[in-house]
Length: 314
Image 1 (cartoon, rainbow, N blue to C red):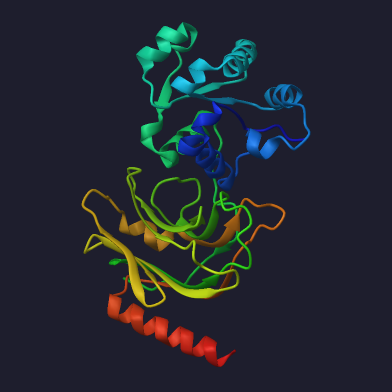
Image 2: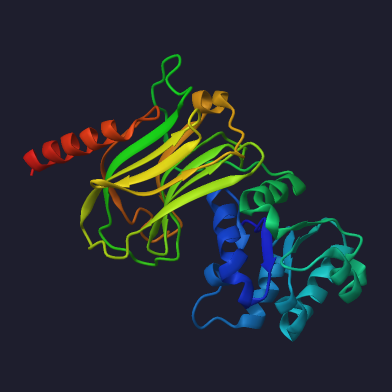
């Protein structure tokens, strides 16, 4: 049995605000993670499972927060992790979540000498630093899709269109990656189209880990229902929009993003991935196209053409 790269020690109150998304992101990029929601099964002994998790992990991520400070269980877990780190070859990787270094130093003086990272840096920057800390390269480790490019195709931006639906929604908390564009070993300069918690998100992460995100509520989508979806990112106009069926659902203009045009020419696209291992593709994509940024009028025409053609096919 391979050892986990990371054991995540945290208070349960911090799952929704940080820890679950962090665990998902680490696993999507190739890490083996011991995280209680995914690693402990119904009927398992909590104490035995945690002890095995610590013993069978190479490093520990400790999410320090006010909730963490207050719990006897997390403090006992911290003591076990600290004892193991003293023996060497086991790093304690600290994340400050809504607390600062001085507060941590007062509560846990022995941790004050360990450099940590603040959760305000964002999931992608944190993930990159965690991989760097243990000398592991993150990778886009799922289905890769190389698309044809010609010179100048993507100097204005990028777009992805697809006819998509969900045969079932299963566990809505699990992130489903409809599309991911990025370079191997890099957590920045990414464009992502994902579904989680009844929303579809289109995210753009620049070379400095700044992120812009727009989204659409799809809680009213029916099982098996298919819709035209288009996500558009324009570098020159500094704008992005999300189009579903016949209208723009969300749009955003931005100023702060720093996008290197070169990455759009070298990045690899990924179509379809999910952490639901028993049925890892809980959606279907009837057709898709990838290309340069498009004007809204062109998107409307494309939507009409695709729906007509698919309608004719039955």
